[in-house]
Structure formats: structure tokens, C-alpha cells
Image (cartoon, rainbow, N blue to C red; front, side, top):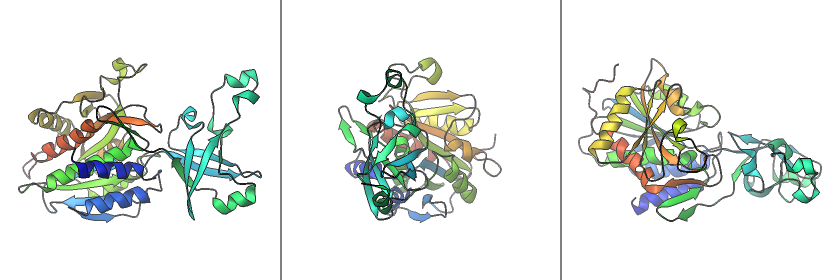
Length: 352
């Protein structure tokens, strides 16, 4: 991956952006997009970057920019904060984590607390943690002081910096799916260098995926594209306890994961497969007999239906502060999308 793109990826991953509060990450994404595309936003918070306006077909590239987080629900008399999850958490992952709360006056540091094992009864030690039994400690002496720092409804993210690992791998929070928002913009950048691009291509950093696929649904309705490609993470199956029989064989470094599913377009899926093979990009296939659990589900049935494909990146430890991906896999997701779109023209038939 070129240095400028890698630096952009790291900046994007470092920004806080839980569902519904994606502004900081969106600002970084839009600033990068302005270097080579027409950029705008919408009332939901989605970000759009366009090239080839007026071309055909019109193709939407969707990667959601939100991440899972926490939200303050109550301030106790002793100044401790009760909270709930924004998106799907394994509560065991939250125990002992540091938190960045996005308060009105700026970021507030906190830590997630739990009763120490030394003062637990024997039967308590055997129980898994639930969010309702945890709290956030911001160091306040009492409720009055805490209320001057944060408000009920303030959101936050895990305070975890990106770590560079050997073999071109990185660990970070927000990989799901800040990585996808990066890939769609990187694919657009690659396409912006093409002199004979036939398609109009719009990269979208979608919001609110982790709480219901909401941003992509609104963005697709407004754009009304002919085709769409969604980018998200999928489970890497090269760790203990993950069944390849159920999830397929997707290891770090094996390349983009191209989805074949009953609810997405086989025309787009086969086009992506052909593009990967034409560019000698390693890939694996993933199957779904129903929904994909990604923004592709919302996009494909918008309006009269949109021919939608799904490209995923193998990801270890999803929905944790240390999601691990291979940077080359990330780059190749963008390359395969770019290669496919270069084959499209006004004569491309997307009707099944």
C-alpha cells in the first residue's frame, strides 16, 4: 500500500465515531476525498464522493464509517456512570477497558469498572459479566461533579491506539468497518486516474450500520444507482474454535472475500470474481443462503431493487478493541473493486 493511503487509513481508524456520532471520522474521510472527487454530505451524516458524473452505469460503493461504542444512561450519586452498548458488544471485552467519552466540552477519559474478584462471592466468580453490572469511572467525587463533565446520552469508544504487527498486519478498534469506508474511497482514487472510465462512481461512507443499516438505506434511496458494491469485514477463520464448515476458509492474507448469496446479484458477484482472476488477485468465496448482515441487505432492495455485490476483508476478533486485518487484504479489496468497475459501460446489462 502506498504511504499516503496507509497514513489515511491510520488517521481514519484513530477517529472516534460510534453509530449516530460519526462526525470526526467523516471529516477525515471527506477531507481525503476532496483531493480527487466531488464531495458532499446528507442530513443523516452519510458522506459522498463522486467521479464520472453523468456516466453509465451509476455505481454506489458503500462502506460504513460508524463503530460500536457506549452511551451513558445514568449518573449515580457517587459520580459513577451507568451505560449501555451502542451496537453489539461481548460484555467480557469491555471489562477493564479505558473509554473516550465524547462530551459537550470535549473528550473525557474514563475506565470501565467491575467488582474486584477479591470481594466476590464464589458463585459470582463463575458468572459472566453483563453490561448492567458494569460502570464507567471518570474520577468524579459525586454526581454533581460528574454531571458537569458528562450528560446522559453522551457516547464513547474504547481508548485503544492502532498497533502495527509483523507480516503487514494491524490491530485496532473501529476496523469494523472504518476499513470499508477506507476501501471504497481508495477504489475511487484508483478509478480517478482512469482516462476512459465509463461509469459514474459514488463512494459512500455510510452511518448507523451497527444499529440497523440505516445510513446505507437512505443513501441508496437518494442515489438510486444501477449497481452497488458493499465493503465490510467478515470473520477470519484461521483462529481456534471458528468452524470453517459454517463460515468458510478465510485466513489473513488470503485476499478479498467475495460473497455469493441468495439476496445479492449474481451478475455483480461473477463480475467481481472475473476481475479478481483477471488481475491475479487471490480471493476466497463466502456463501450465504439468506441475508448477509451488512449494508448490502439494505441497499439491494431499495426502490425497485439495486444489483448489489459484497466484498469483505478477513478480520480477527470482530467487535473488540483489537480487530486484526492484513493490510494487503485491505488494499486488494480496493483493487478488485476498481478492476471490476473498469469493465462497466453504458452497454452493461445488470437485468437478471
